[in-house]
Amino acid sequence: MILLESLLKKTRKYRLAWQAEADLHGRLKNIAHLLTGNFASAFIGLAGFALTARALGPADYGLLALSFAYTRGIERFVSFRSWQPLIKYGAKALQVGETDDLKALFKFGLLIDLATALAGWGLAVLIVLFAGPLFGISEEMSRFVLIYCAVLPFQVTGMPTAVMRLYGRFKIVAYGQVAASILRALLCLAGVYLGWGLFEFMLLWMASQICSSLNRTVWAFRELRKQGLTGVMWVPLGDIRTRFPGFWSFSLWTNMALIIQACAFEFDTLLVGYLADPGSAGLYHIAKRVAKIAQQAGEQVQAVLYPDLSRVWATEGIDEFRKTVSQTAWLLFAFGVCALVGAYLTIEWVLRVTAGPGFEAAATLVMVQFVAVIMFLCGRTLYSALLAMGHEKILLQSALLGGVLFLFTAIALIPRVGAVGANVAHIVMSGVWFVQMAIAYRRKLDTKR
Image 1 (cartoon, rainbow, N blue to C red):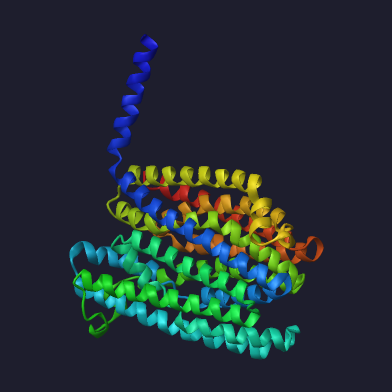
Image 2 (spheres, helix red, strand yellow; image 1 turned 180 degrees about the vertical axis):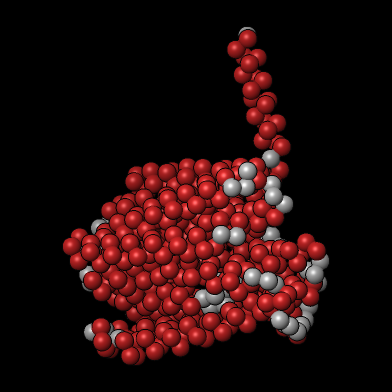
């Protein structure tokens, strides 16, 4: 009887403590929307990739994967990621009701997005034309890549991302991409039955990327009108440095850190294709797409966590800040471990049913990549925390060291052990990134006591 009463008291205590965590409830609700939409979109997208792989076979699919990876890598390399400074400075302007500052920020962010998108397209074309022959890239490969580069001028994502996150429209973001993924998968299924070849599937994937980007921009402007922010493109910018002190330095350091990481995550498929062969690149790309389903959890958590941590840090709520970071980190770690176990139990069957028997060899690559994903998930929380604390230079240092070690590890291992060498390189990079940020976070937080 006494034991039962004690158990009931503890249960009531934990229930009351859980009910008191209103901020955590809202954060988890938004994360749940993003994760649900992202997982659904990722699984459906994986089906689209699998249907494409089944229709084309490893060799032709490898060519498409390399074209996709190249344009994605260039996009990530030149992208200004304007959503980071727009959220940081936009949150302050939103709290004090400075609508003119908000309009100027969004206009400036959109102009930056357009400029970097065009610059990325020009850079991608020039690299193929001038560097392709030097590295022995075939004319057929160069031709397909040049055609695929046409998606780059339409990749405007920074400003739309900032708008939807600032105003908490996570549900629209989450389920809008699910609808787009369903449409793309249905078109891929139609392509399989119609006997489409490499060129037709390439046009399909290009069209899906372009339409997705345009759709995000349209939704962002609809949200701005809903919030009463009309005439955004007509507001004068003024002196950005005066209106938003530290805007350029914050943007520079954070973008350099993300560019280094983007190079590793986007150009790794190209590295496998160059140091091994297109078939290995195709297997690696499939494996990375599977692991990315879990990896996206960290990115979606950051989408919700970063604005919250920025507000808490501005009020100097150190205890709440520490608790929020700890809760989120453990949540992501547990999720990563569950994803690893789930992949271990089902990955061979999933690959056999979706991509086909020829892609079962990617199972080992998936398992190794999931180890890196767990480290990446935990590191994503620390990244958001250090970003909110204003220590963007530390983020650059950790990304630079991890990127250098990734490159050396990949170059050393891929020729010897094949595509799995790139997976091991990701483990090295994510591990170094996490450890360095964890040490910096602990030190910086101790100085605020």
